[in-house]
Image 1: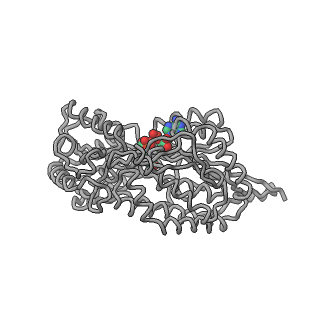
Image 2: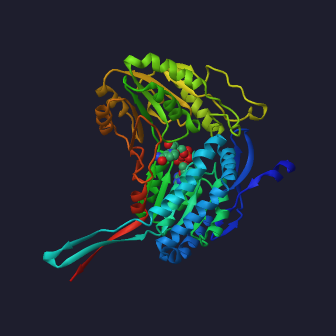
Image 3: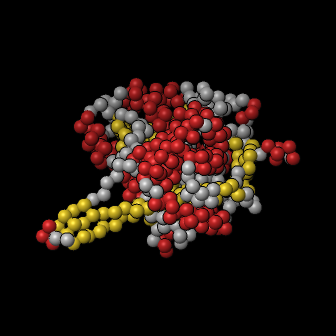
Length: 488
Ligand code: NAD
């Protein structure tokens, strides 16, 4: 109707420092009500072409600024986002379905920190130098920005993951063509309004909104974009690898996970249980680092299961803008259906659903009846070969199974195609080190979860990714190194 279309939020692409309307749009839904509330540009090749041109024009000046000048600009942008933190948090929660509490305490503060972190770290890198006295030669390395960075990000942590790419890319002197997920583009668009005030000159960061198959692929296939940083699913990463192969692009791929928790019988359950409930269901289970396979040693299995289910049942699901709610809505109707189907498949295989989907009833307030909600769900008596134990579900579903020995649990934990994150719970220090060494996983947290030092490498093994991001890793990825030899 006319009245509802008037209230729709309409986003525009941001190219060469200007907001430009698009000829067609994609509907974007509010996951907690099921209503269309926003229209996202359905851009294509033409818009990507314009963005690449703008990024190319901006490159000579931006890349020749000193790290200190760029650092000051990044800090300014961080301050501006922080100033508007509450507005950003509300927008992220509405657009994605996550709780306002999560957006306020995790997503937006982290986006601010991403800029501050790379504003600082860019000032402290050093290059290498070696001497070959006998040959009368000195060798040294020099690092320069790569050029135009193509950045593609997913819908689960929209501004958080996009800024984790934009910040190091521009700190290193690259210019950017970025595409957030078409399902969660609002906060990226809001951030573009702050660029000018922060001192980011026109064309340094260009935002092209739209689908993966049109905008994403146009960026990946563009001959003038030598580098792609992608966070998303393993399937999409395979396509990006194929499509970019003819151009020999630099790729960084942060992909899915099927993350195990290994709970040994000497674990401190008072810490382990609440942390593992959180690691399973935080952000509706829509974090690549979420736990979805919990292996518990036989001696404590029954106690763990009982307490874990009790704790899970305490989680309040509902209106994301209610600050007392623990879990909001899933991203889309289709995704909710997909996650529910996994639970159905497990049931059909003879697994037991201890709480959540299909077992307990979910009561929602009047305004949220059409939202994409489901209860946190715990599955047990399930085989390691089951699709629920092998495939990434990316929703509030976790499986709990028993194990006997350390040797056995390491093998079972490693028995999936993914290798992103693992948690180990034990009070035996030697065991913690021993097990951490043998897990096929880019990150291993012992007796904690999600504690990150951005200085250190982040990324996955096996089907969970290629490359790492972090202070040094992102610097290396977003620059080209040259070795220069001087004979004296
Ligand atoms: P997705 O792969 O469907 O989409 C990610 C992005 O890629 C979106 O912007 C999408 O539009 C774009 N895209 C889709 N097809 C494309 C194509 N052919 N060419 C170029 N771009 C394309 O993933 P999603 O559903 O948005 O996100 C969920 C996935 O992301 C999960 O698998 C999750 O584990 C993963 N993830 C990984 C990390 C990590 O750091 N390892 C972090 C968050 C999410």
